[in-house]
Amino acid sequence: MYLVENPVLQRELLVNLRTSRAFVLLLLYQLILAALVYFAWPQDQRLDLTTNPAAARNLVDLFFFGQYLLASLMAPSFAAGAITGEKERLTYEMLLASPLRPGAIVVGKLVASLTHLGVLIFSSLPIVMLCLPLGGVSVYELLAAYLGLIVSVLTFGAISIACSSYFKRTSASLVVSYLLILPLAMTAILAWYWLTNLGQFRLLLTLTLVPGVGLALCITLLANTSARLLHPPDVGSEGNEVVDLEREAKEAVGLVIQRDQFPDMLFAPAKRDTLMPDGTNPVFDKEIRSEIFSQGTLMLRVVIQVSMVLAIPLMALCLYIAPAYAPWYIAYVLLFNMLVGPVFSAGSVTSERERQTLDLLLTTAITPWQILWGKLLAGLRVSSVLTSFLLWPVLLASVMVSSYWTNLLAVGGYLGIVMLSCVTTAMLALFTSVIFRKTSVSLMTAYLLILLLYAVPLAARFFAERFFPAHEAVQYVIRSGLTSPFAAAFAMPLDVEISTEIGSPAVIGDLWLVTAYAIFTVALNIGLLVAMMWLFNKRWRVSQ
Image (cartoon, rainbow, N blue to C red; front, side, top):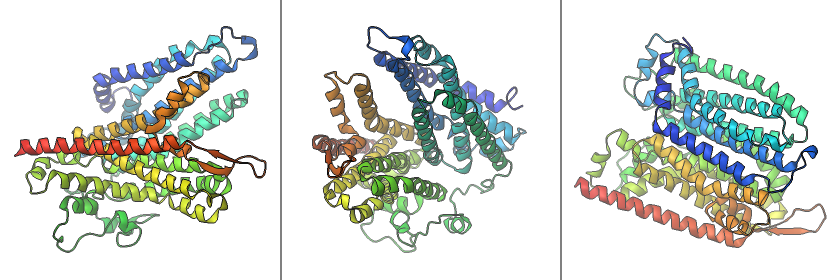
């Protein structure tokens, strides 16, 4: 019943594997990995296989790092909507009323969600086999790496399924899944890299500790999810999907959001008990006071608590102990905004389409400009306030640490880069929300666009400097980082002592790249706003 004759598993497999998206994704996955191996192939005319060539090992490590990151990013996109999708389609209660056991439902959803990803992973075997004749890596290390990858994917899928059972919207489940999975994925990649010279020890850990911990987490999470389906707390609401925030605050464990106190009132103002003043934008007032929080504050509380817990050690190391690593903390803040920013804007317009209220909204006296800036400002206000919670340690460090007293302009540049990133992520998500009809598609497209702008230039730069350091095109690849706030943060001139010798400061940075990033980002946001206005005005004229 769990795997052989599981109707949930059979139905999900037929739907997922027969779509055109499955074949396109398989093609793109293979093309990316094949291109990675092709361009990173050792350029030496001869390789001495008796000396364990470093070039071959670097190639295989880069292949697995790339595949591990791709699998880690795709696992939540497949599994985070497994149960929330049923809730959004209003089929959740019918699924629970079926004779299927909760465990069979959870296992079927997990296996169906990760089967396509498993096909992608195993389809990469012929590519990596081409690297084995180069030497440097044994077949046992190759099998151990694939075992660790499969266990990690199963664990990430179980985390996503568990998040999907706690939330009512796929967007909330997706962002919390990423927030929990990315630190684990980065820890695994760093551990694999640091243990490169300890091949036997790394092999032992991969064959013993990783499967044991991963399977224990999977079993625990799946058991917890099955228990929630057996005794669902969110069924029987009689069609009322709005959560009582006051009751939730009383029953919440840990962080509690008080909407009438600072700083919670910045992103969660209290409910309005009076009439709106003249000139108030009703779209913004409605979105900021009720729409964003209509499904409860669980997602917000989890995001705030997890982000602050992860920020504490990074804050201590990068801002106070070793100020030269300040850009790394800014990178963490930017990564947090990448995850959180699109969530509050990607459903701004698609939610109106899903509720079939967009036509009603367009026939009101509210202009398209008021609709757009109201929805943009509502989502931007929440994401920017949440991001600013991680920025106050930077301001505190600029006062307490003397190394920053001569770098106040750099600190101001960091804050400006983060603010521009907040606006860009919200604007991109709102743009995709205008284009697409489903919130899940809008959110995933926004994440994809942000990755292309923010992460791909960094990956291209790392690849070029690692494998083609003397090539003349490397400088052009570096300049292409003008689209990435990460590149701008690391290019910010910072006068700090990075040497062990006393009194040997080093200025790192590239003001051209920082300036180019600011100009590009402003132009991009203006272009997106103009495009959305054109689309809305076109829709406005049609509706009239």
